[in-house]
Amino acid sequence: MTVTMNTDSGFGSGNEEGAIADVLNGFALTSGLRRRKRGERRDDPDDGREATGEQESREAASSSPAEPTDVVWPGEEDHDRSWTGEEQFVSAEPIPVEPVAPPPAAEETGFVRPYAITGGRTKANYPLELETLISTRDAAVLPVPDQVEHQVIMEECRTPRSVAEIAAVLQVPLGVARVLISDAADTGLVTVHRTVAGSENAEAHFMLMERVLSGLRRL
Amino acid sequence: MDSVGFKAPRQAAPKTMTSAKIVVAGGFGAGKTTFVGSVSEIVPLTTEAMMTDASTGIDDTAATPNKSTTTVAMDFGRVSLDEDLILYLFGTPGQERFWFMWDDLVRGAIGAVVLADTRRLADSFAPIDFFEDRGLPYIVGVNTFDGVLQHDLNDVREALSIDESIPLVRCDARQRESTKQTLITMVEYAMQQWLAVRGAATPNPVG
Ligand SMILES: Nc1nc2c(ncn2[C@@H]2O[C@H](COP(=O)(O)OP(=O)(O)OP(=O)(O)O)[C@@H](O)[C@H]2O)c(=O)[nH]1
Ligand SMILES: [Mg+2]
Image (cartoon, rainbow over all chains, first blue to last red; front, top):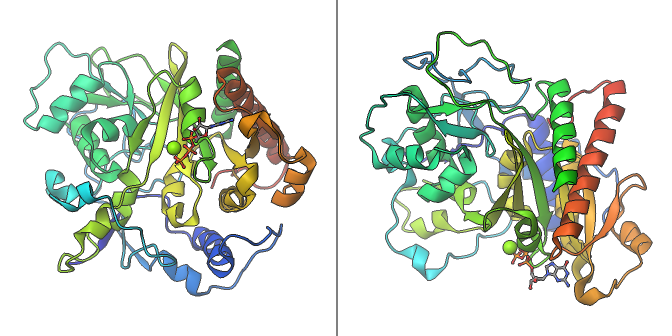
């Protein structure tokens, strides 16, 4: 089985692919030295579109967590936000324009498939954005997790930590961190805080901006 | 704004926390890490997550697993703005070959700061194109390397071909105050944009 797993849930609309194609083509053709032309857009699909590969989506197995203890429930948010709960597979390497630079030598040894620690699973049950906050639950008795990664997550999230921070601390790819966090939430170890930002609730997004603005001014 | 329908009694769940995200983009050496670091309460963390994700498992028979572990430095910082509010800054290379990271980055973001190095303005084109395509509010921070503004700001605007309405500010990423002001300008602009868009047909600024 040789698929490329792309856990980015934001892919998929032809629109976005078109947008990406714009960027890619503009630069593939001119080495980035052209002057930008505003409003220059391509509408027709072209080979840039293949950059993203044809994507097959697999329906998320909509298994609910065992216990209703979390702040955010899978599928409960109004998902104008593009998280779909679907796993997406792309069939080709998504970087067609330039060959990827060779990795540093240190990276060449000891390659381990990152999804080994999730048993190959790539799906998260929650809309876990980079900035989504995770807290260890405050319950009097928490099960001791078997998996060391879950122990690390519980340790880290005694004060709220973002998905990105957890991925960095665990030194795993974002997609792997998402599965691990999702599992930890399913077993009631951690709480997934609701992520306000986004287009699903424009009012809330505006209020968030207001709060961020006054917070920045106070810094 | 954070209320959701709790389905069952919960054991002392932590207080509701809110987070927000701002993207900092720019070419190599434009000052992204410096910018993020100058306001972050943590040393900017680096993750190679998305690069690995996007290229993992290309072919398990190919003898080039190296290819799937190419690193890309995306650093992020954290700024606690209130007891229950944390702002994350994500600094990311603007090169188009990293475009696959940007979907995660821009989704739900308040907006972006494009750091422009006047010595290499063309490096700013890709992120600007991308943010314009996504309708993500962005401003441009022009680094004044060596204290010298090598271009008149109007020339920079012209060279970048960005609209008059898009804020273009001088920014010394090494100065916390300057970074802070740049972020304030960005959020103010994003709020203006939000208000402008509310009147229009598409209340979907980030896609
Ligand atoms: N004069 C001046 N120097 C700056 C400014 N911002 C960054 N620098 C310096 O420029 C150099 C590069 O800054 P970085 O923050 O590492 O830039 P970067 O965008 O993260 O670079 P890469 O991650 O390598 O692409 C460092 O030596 C900084 O001290 C600025 O606003 N003014
Ligand atoms: Mg850097």
